Length: 566
Image (cartoon, rainbow, N blue to C red; front, top):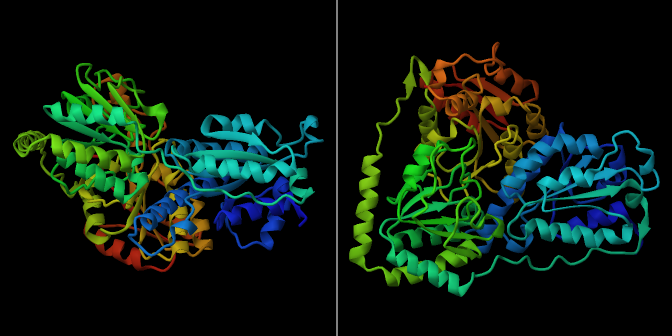
C-alpha cells in the first residue's frame, strides 16, 4: 500500500494506541494536518507551543496512572490500550523554542513524551529560510533522543525507536524533526510493531542482599522516596510501605517530589524534605539512609549545610543509573524497577529484623515526630486566608480529586494537609513556571478520554497561571471537566524567600523590584475572557461553598483565592 510520510506517521501513532495529538500548527506541518482530517486521532489545539507541550506532558502522566491501574487490576481498563505517551507537534525553530520551557519541565518530571516538528524541505534547508534552525540541537539537552528523519522509508523505524525510548525507564521526552518533503513523499513502508516495553528489572542479587543486610544492621533507618515510586503505580507505593514497616524506618519524600510515593496517613510518614538545607540536613542526620527513585533531592541554591552525612550508610535504588550515587556516594546501589526491588527487600528485611528491634526503631520515629510537631497554622491572618486554610478546604471539599500542582510556596501546606493516595497527585519537578495550567488541561483530557469520574483540580499559583492564561481556551474548546484554584498572593513569593536564603535574614527585611503584581491582574475576568467560569473568593468563609459550586459547574472553572504569605 502506498502512503505519504505524513499518513505513515499518523498510522504509526494509531498502531501504538495513541489517540490524541496536542499541537499548534504551522506551514511545515500542513501535510500532517491534512492527514489528521481522515484520522481517528483527536487534535487538541494549544494557543501557544509551550501550552501544547505542557498539556501533552500532563496527559502522559495521567495516562501512566491509568496504565498502572490497569496493570494492577484496580480498574477495568485494558492495559494494552492505555499507552502512557503524550505527543505534541510544533512548528519549526520558533515553535520549538516556545516549547522548550515545558520540554525542560517534562524532562525533569520524567514525562513520556514524543515532540515532533515540521521543518523545511531537505533541498531547501541550505538557504536558511525563515524560522529555520538546528532543531535537533535545540531539543537535545532536554530529551533522551533527538533526531531528524532523513528519508520517508526511515520514518516508521524512527517513530518506533522514539516511542520505545520515551517509554523505557527512565521515561522522558524524545524529539523528531520531520522535513516537509518527507511528509509529502510516498512510500510502501508500514508501521513497525512496538513490542513490549521493558521494566528496569529485578535488580542485582548481590546488591539487594547487601542492602538488606545494611537495613538489618541499621540503628535508625531513614527512607527518602522519589517520584519514580509514584510513577511506577500503586503496587510500588504498597511495596514502599511494606519495606518501611519491615525496617521500622522514618519516611520522607525527596525535595520537590510531585507524586504520592507513600501513604501520607501512615504513622511512619514524616512529610517531604524541605527545600531549605538545614531542615533537610537535620532529617537525614542518621546512620542509614535509603534513597529510592530520587532525582531532585537537592536545594535550589548551594546548601550551606551538608545534606547527607559522610558517616551514614547510603543505599540508592533507582531505574535510572544516572541518579545512583549522583548527589552523594552510595555504599550500595541497585538498578531496578522500584516495585520489584522494594518487594524483594521487604521480604528479606522482615525476616532479618525481629519484632523487638522493629518496635525500638518505631519508638525513635515517634520521638522524632513529637520533636518536630508544630502548632497548626491558622485559617486566616488579618482577614486573608492562609495557604494552610486553603489546603484544608481542598481536603474537605474534594478529598478524592486528582490534584495537578504548580504552586511553589503554597504546595508545602497542601502536602501537609491533604492525604494523598497513589495516583492522586501530579506536578512539575523542573521549577520552570508555566507548566501547571497546561498539565492540568492535559490530565483532564486523559481523564475525559478514559471515561473516569475523578475531578481534576489544578492547583496553580498566580505567578504560574499568568504565564499562559490562554490555556483555558483549550479547556473550553474541549469541554473539559476541570477546576483550577489559584492561591493568589500577587507576587513571586519564592523569589523573596530565596533572596533571604541567598543573602541572609528574613524575606520581609528586603525591598524588591519586579516581584509584585501591582496592579493585580483580574484572574477571574481573564478566565471568563477565554470562555471559562471565573470567580474570586471575596470572603474566607465562602471558600468551601465556592469550591463546591466550581467542582459541579459544567466545563472549566477558575477560582481565584487571595491568600496571605504569612
